[in-house]
Length: 605
Image (tube, rainbow, N blue to C red; front, side):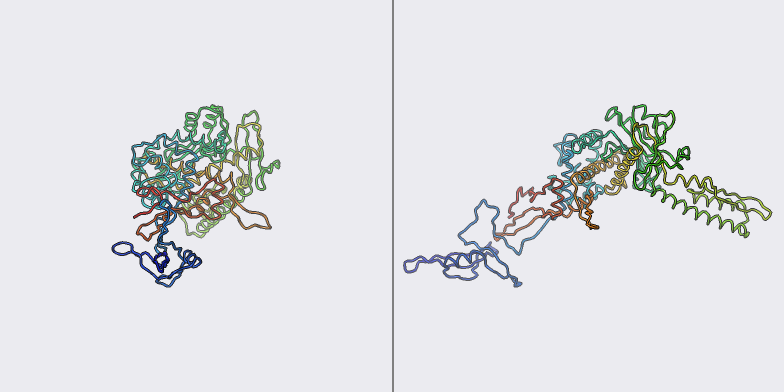
């Protein structure tokens, strides 16, 4: 709607009469229709009409529109001015933007875009393989799923096609599978690249290495994958075939290397392979290995010493018996409110043992023992009563019942002396608690034993170093929960290994975000108690969740001349999101470039 002047000569003078007109769509094209005649307007009236006019739509709703005279045209090169039909403006093509944008920025900070451009890109391909690798890793970080789920559900709902500049219709599960095949041969180069990049970004050091293992299972029979075997399942899925994953991280959780083993491989048998693999990739060095007792054997420790390495490891509980006298002494050192430690030197030995005891662990083990003891004593009394009353007379059945009771209570079965004896009244059950074993059990509850060849360290320092093993355990938790490495749906061995590699890339992004949030603390306010500030740093998943509400969308503006202006924009971040973006050193773009038919924000006829 605009003002149109009509010039007329009268009595030798030029007069300008004004009318209010609007553009309407007709079968033959846009036409101008007169709404009303305004007559001559003086300066103030004319200015007032030019500013705004209040119009009513068919529903009786009023709105203010800016008016332009018909002889005043916007500059041809000014894309900011157009006659828009306000009641037909719409929003299209909403996409998830924030979390994907963060994932891509983490990818670039680790310079993984350059790494894969140099290793896997084939410029004759429809889509550069480095961009497909980025897509797989960002999916593992933001919304882990199968390749089919990426193609059908996740990728179409994200703005990654704009961020990675991938043409429509180019992402399918076949292309994702082929990318897995391309990236797998570069595993060793990738690990070296990430190690160097962690050092540049965070000053990460890899003198102390934490080593641990886990398992993950496969869906299906996986008959063509010789790695898949049945073994000890940490996922409580003994019905499924599985593989074992060994992970090496530093004390801050940065991944150093990983390896895959057959599903029935014993933990203790992997150490020699890992030592050779690390030497092959990174050369010989005087490294400190921190491991749980499941990986410890005399052969493994000898292999570390042979390489001039050092170790700090947990030990089997059976070795604690030789330190029974030390457990009862009072010369413990309190290192935490619930933790006490003491050093036990071995005469004429090159090793040091550290006894540790925690109150929480002691309470837990006591509760387990008391629960099993109560249950076993109740079962023994029931069996004794059945035998005494004559309801159970067959000795073989008595022995089977007794065997079942002992099998159901393995944590405490060794604490009871149980026997079936012939008496004048017949076979009777006799049982009693072995006080010596009970006393030993009580004295060792809550205690564990460390073993090391490190020199000149206090018991507290050694205990603190061993506690850093929780970083390796946290890595596995992230892989299995946030990054959903399980279950495996691939059936071929190379694809399974490539799936683990993508999870490794996802963890690289996750741990980078974790340390960026630590270095620049993102504080989430929590209710304070007595005026104390209880703000806590954001976790990686909380940061991703916070940014996931940022969307990109197309604003479509229909104009009076039959065109549509399409603007691809990103939603305005909230105050909390802006704070997080500042702390991460990120700036969200206000607009995204339209591709294909629209190389820039433009009008579509």
